[in-house]
Length: 257
Image (cartoon, rainbow, N blue to C red; front, side, top):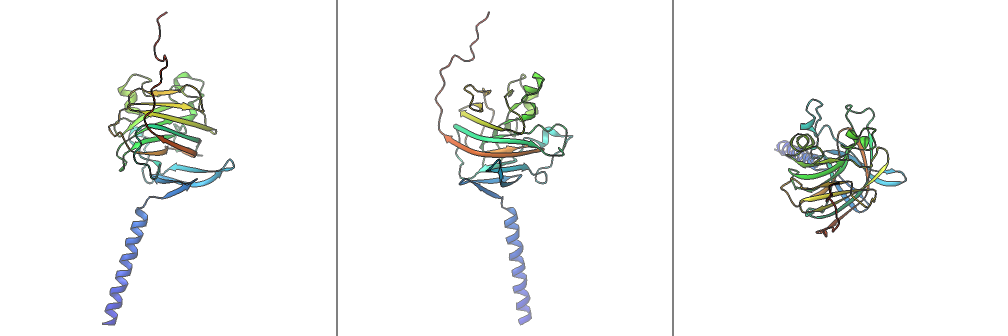
């Protein structure tokens, strides 16, 4: 009888240990930097000292979401990012962050461009979000055609980069920006209704405008993004919520000569 009770308790303990392990493994890793906590979604990460300051370092987790060089469109622009914990109601406002992009050595495939940027209006289950990111490798290329791919807007899941290139006129959702690898880039994104505007390094005028965002999810979280072959460092994230005042500048109106 005692032996039977002992075996039952042993089995119960084992089941509890297995269940506890499964729960721990099922939880997403969280990292805290300067009183801000980030939840890692399909990225690996750590808080490290870089350039004399503590920063968030993340890389895409290829075990969580495999990359297929023969199906690039289907295996990039996915929910691989670090999500800011405690913010679930971002609709309009400003997102500012400083970011630094390196390419992994060796790179996983030749097309790696240091993809790094911001996701916003992220749905709680990661099923939808908007994103703006840069490809620093081509930001100062000697070819204007390459430079025109330095900035990218996406709307997950139906409007990834390749779909946008095929379905819209050239330059509709891509553009140029003065960015480069291995240097700090300050990105500021102003989100207002259906539009988004991106500023680089405190320049007075924006480098990129999304005239009409394509996502149906209008409110959600904010996250820091990297993609294939990129080591990303982030610091000084600041999110300000609220509708932005419309600018009264004579932009976009060109007189014929």
